[in-house]
Image (cartoon, rainbow, N blue to C red; front, side, top):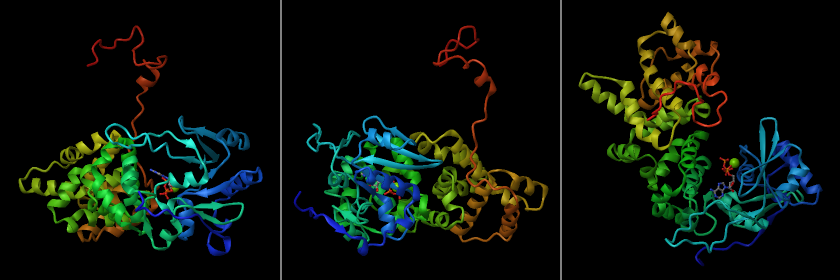
Length: 438
Ligand code: ATP
Ligand code: MG
């Protein structure tokens, strides 16, 4: 489409940008230098370059090169190739993984299917650096830092967009969002986190293609929902999802509640903001995130029940989470922990921190998250708890496990019993397994 401006390659030399080798992870830097001295192109790519140019600390450092995966395997002993269709190298340093990929391009655009769908199946072929830049999602995510010249290379107009704080798809957003609808969620998350605006045509395309989020795989969408909570910007990220019509497809019960309770003034925003501002926010477990996200819904049900004199918080919580957790296949133990966090809230009112019951509560591994939820509810509802600081000081003395979640308890019978020598689901001969399992 000609309405999309095709930028020329821009090379910004070392003297004109702020990326210093000192800010690059030393292991990533070593990989870059090793590749370069072996004669290969070696670029730092993606979110890492973007964050360095913005003066932020990158979460991870990804590398792209013209060396093929097998060459990478030969050059780095600590290298593991993953992925079937497109082989990606993971270079491992203890717990750290540096993702190193060979330049690749988009699959051919001519494979539009009968129904007009351009949904992209993961099937990539090697390409040039320019092609690698153009297969990426947003212009600011497609910048390269070249270790040989220390310059930043921009094939897509990303530098200009970085300066004007604009999140813009590379090419026609209508095509790019249909290829991979998860990019719409990435737009909401990145714009919220970086405090960028989403450019006009991308915004319009999000509204237009919102329903196509259903074409994305459920595990990817689930993961992306949970990623919205990282970086203390969940309120804005969910506001974008709501504003650009995605929320109704992602979490319809929440969308309905927001629409019924005054849209921009819905309580959801207060709870998410309180989570973003909480000290535990970046360590929050998925259980706590879900508890906060759904709390306005829970609260409404609890209040209604209280009026009718029959409160069962556990049953309500379970029921209100049912559709969401089934659809996104939320692990049982995560759901169970969410319910436990809600249930635990009553204990703050019923006990004092120095009573035996209170001390037992504090010693519970779930306590730090329960306390965080208590703080978040207080902040969101503009309430005070005179005992809050007492609960908090006592916690400091206990061994905190901020991301505790219930784990499936080991059932010895299963582990050491009938499953021991079996490599399929059939029970071994001689066990008293009932014949009909259904
Ligand atoms: P974060 O800082 O949260 O990790 P990021 O931009 O680094 O954000 P990643 O998911 O780590 O996001 O992806 C790394 C890079 O891979 C992106 O910067 C982008 O260039 C590319 N990328 C990721 N997801 C997509 C996608 N769905 N379509 C096209 N390119 C993508
Ligand atoms: Mg990243």
